Length: 575
Picture (tube, rainbow, N blue to C red):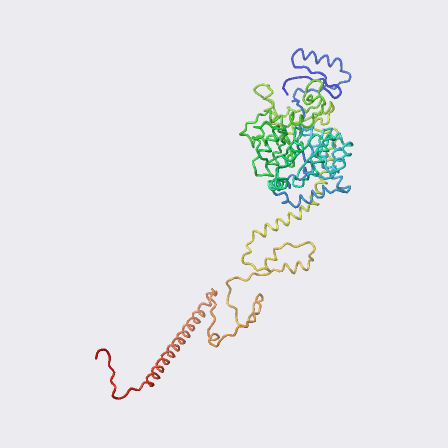
């Protein structure tokens, strides 16, 4: 790729001649006009920047309407969001209804149309489907947009179907390596014999699954596939996070490639993506939008800012969404010559960048290729792309798709989105989540089980009468309350039948309520305490007198038993 001021002559679907901006080149353009003035269309590109179209290495259209829902998911815990699970179960059903098929058509028309307006002409489209129900909707979308697509092919489907969809360049997409069997690997080998050139692996993104695979096969997925000669220059790994050094060595030796989806890595993982190791080993990499990305140019800037310490040049960043992925996935020229770029005898595929807007002016220090790359990477967004030329024919002109009715498409895709959110029970789950968050904020420590039931979730099947019964207002009894007046019973108290037999002394002893804090009852409490002290003193005195009486009677009894003779004298000591 290079940069300069040129005039182009396009005949049919190819560039047949070029002329630079010198005086000699101007005279050449005048000759073109003289020869073809009767049947040519002259396009003034004075305030246009023309470049080859963009290439999206990884697009997942089935999540295009669910970006904000998918942000809650994680590579390590993919089962957290019930709403998206319900939606995907609806989208991926094997025998879809007419409504589901219409929704798939709307999803792909919307996704591919938006990519076209963003200057993306080449797409690697991935789906988690186990059947081929997405082939017809993708085919219809491509016919309207004119884009070139590589579409993933389910391994367990009829191999003969590929013959009917060769124009979609079927490829194999392997994910969830924990479900892989040796039978599947042999089928992949067979598919490659049917010209399924590209193999995409979204593996090593979940630590637990990666470790489980190693325990089952006693080696990593990369090592196992390499034994079947399935790791080569046509193999690409999507966001590999948990590769071992031995895996990295295999990828380097077999010249496999890496696809990076920056926004997916940003939301789906907390682990550092080792892009510096891949670059250091000379592994080719390209950038895609994945599940969450919407604008390929924004993905490039996100990638650059996240790894700014690597000082990756704007040229290499631009190559990651243009030249490199096209060479890897869409260069089907048998001679091996690169068909991508703007040059003589190459396809007339290009995008036009409008420089008329005051907010988007191009003032470089010098008009060099590096300065143009810096300007594009720093400033270009999809709204600045005004026209797309595919095979010499405009598919986007003046920001308007030629074969798509935007108003109808927006209306139909909004209907699909509402249907998807209704299928996923989004509103219901949102209300339940809010109710749970509210109940979690309440202090339930001092409440009884019956009171906690007030905050439990209720199903829709509960009748209004039962609901009203369950949600009666129940007052919580305070820990400190006034002493109940004799003969008056609280409505919240239950009668307790005690089976403990009390002694007479215990019954005579007054019961003290130590929890009474009523100032008016302080006098009565003092009287009770004084009376209790008096009773205690009486009991102590009684016990003391009883002990003394017992001692005297014992001494009398002992003395009455000893009778000494009259002539006996008692001696004490030495006397």
